[in-house]
Image (cartoon, chains in turn green, cyan):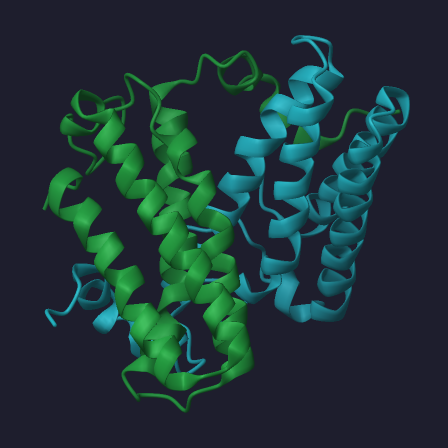
Amino acid sequence: MRVPVAVLAVLSMWSSAAVAQVKPEDAIQYRKAQYSVILWNWMPMNGMVRGRIPFDAKEFAKRAERVAAVAPQLLEGFPQGSNAGAETEAKAEIWANFADFTAKMKAFEQASAALATTAKGGDETAIKAQFAKVGESCKACHDAYKAE
Amino acid sequence: MRVPVAVLAVLSMWSSAAVAQVKPEDAIQYRKAQYSVILWNWMPMNGMVRGRIPFDAKEFAKRAERVAAVAPQLLEGFPQGSNAGAETEAKAEIWANFADFTAKMKAFEQASAALATTAKGGDETAIKAQFAKVGESCKACHDAYKAE
């Protein structure tokens, strides 16, 4: 068969991820992408929590589920040495305190997973309370490890 | 409580996604991000299929599952009017032929879902065959709707 374009597109890159020797610039692009996906899904939840758009339990649950699904995929975007190589707001402190960084990532994972579960329940008050907790888990990591 | 940084970060953007009046540049950033996530997960699968790294059924299944999860999230990154506003390789033909574009996206969804299912089975021959089909579904859409 003809080699699909999508396959050709990655041939020049396979050696980075595929052999677990990730190029810093690829890891930086990946983690930025995942944060963009989180933000995209966070925005409508935030609009509902702030009362700027009508609360839609089904839509909120879908967005919460998507954020919870991304959370466990973030850490692989921070391999050793990926504090440089492309524009990044990730501080070098991440790799100097990787256990703490990992713990903060796990806290975000747990908070976002709890939000997805709470959102399925449809209790608006409980959902808003857990949404705030997820935001706090974001802030805890950003305060320590994200450059302004 | 203090307003989390993550919430502040989206306040200025809420009006776009939250009221379903997405800014073209936000949609473009979102869809590029999702394609970056797909590529990140595609690379190691490609390395295994091409025999450049040892086949690892568990790792392959994880990557296939992640691509299958992103696939149904792509279409919302192509709202009307998002053919401009930021650098994009998306051709205007997408919105002129949106039914066909949607059908090609659905074909990718189905092929990637089938790959995730096949990958769980661990049959390397079947996995490689379905991986090629997913690549063909990428190519079908890129050939028609992605600028070189």
